[in-house]
Amino acid sequence: LGYKITTTHQQTLTQTQSKTLKVNASFKVAILGAAGGIGQPLSLLIKMSPLVSDLHLYDIANVKGVAADLSHCNTPSKVQDFTGNNELSNCLKDIDIVVIPAGIPRKPGMTRDDLFNINANIVKSLVEAVADNSPNAFIHIISNPVNSTVPIAAEILKQKGVYNRKKLFGVTTLDVVRANTFVAQKKNLKLIDVDVPVIGGHAGITILPLLSKMKPNVSFTDDEIEELSVRIQNGGTEVVEAKAGAGSATLSMAYAAARFVESCLRALDGDSDVYECAFVESEITELPFFASRVKIGREGVEGVVSSDLEGLSEYEKKGLEALKGELKGSIEKGVAFANKEK
Ligand code: NAD
Ligand code: LMR
Image (cartoon, rainbow, N blue to C red; front, side, top):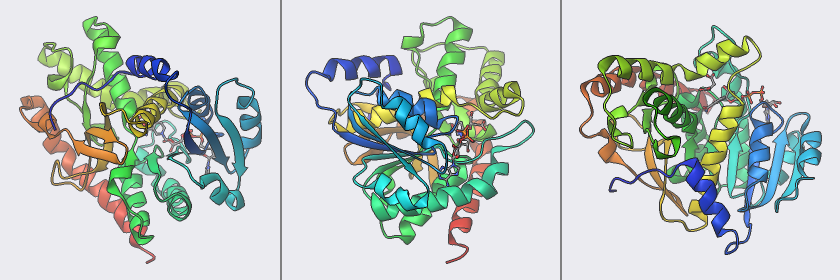
């Protein structure tokens, strides 16, 4: 794959809107955990997409009201609600993209890995239902710890005989959204021009922004690189502390997840120039899963932008080596969990 600039969200919306005269809303999206802090604003943003014909909202509670409320918006998609295990299979029939933000969020003092015990079970049971009912769908995992929940999902899909590595994504778009925002603020750049690839994983030091590979080409002092990288790595904690016990990022996450869904919808619709960062299975490093820039097409991941790992700065090279141990451990923890009762 050659190097390409990832389309920014502003461009994405404009492109999609300009295409609305040519395309019909025809894609079906399901959100599992739709009544939650992320689920509600994400459902609203997806309800606004001209590419979506059906929006299926699933949660274990409170989803009826969310769906009734959203269904009054005069945008093309038909909204349906599904509650509880009995309705999950119907929710997932003929779905093109399944987004999973179900699970508990952090409180101050917690790591994402502290969410493992509860969220691993939630993701396992939801992905089992996806495997049984919409095995060809793109699956977007938001539930933390993403570094473990994506490997769990892969193992469950393998056990069910329907794993397609091209269609399973850990959503790391929020790291890119934060990097773009913080770098643009720091260097006084126009946001529309800024695109920072963020690779590795989605927790602490496993989040590695590549300032040497960003657009536009900007020079930084060593102190600026350190300050920006640490802020991007701790962006989630910044929000957790500000919310002081009331949860973690929901609105910026919904924005980021909507951008990722919209990019995948454009890819499904035949756009051949869709690039996003995501945590996927790849051979770009010796680790089985790694977040990197990926090209997305009708069948999912068409390739990873391996050139992003060439010519890294010394700071980035060290960061890459430093993250591998933790990321490997989180991946292995997820794989072991998924296989423990086999
Ligand atoms: P929340 O508690 O506000 O909402 C979670 C929702 O999931 C609730 O409505 C709950 O009823 C639902 N739920 C729980 N078990 C379920 C099940 N078995 N099936 C369906 N729904 C179920 O939490 P939130 O703030 O929306 O965060 C959700 C998750 O997203 C957390 O794990 C959080 O850490 C993660 N997150 C990830 C990112 C990222 O960048 N990937 C960013 C922010 C948050
Ligand atoms: C984030 O990056 O905001 C999320 O992963 C939520 C969290 O726990 O920080």
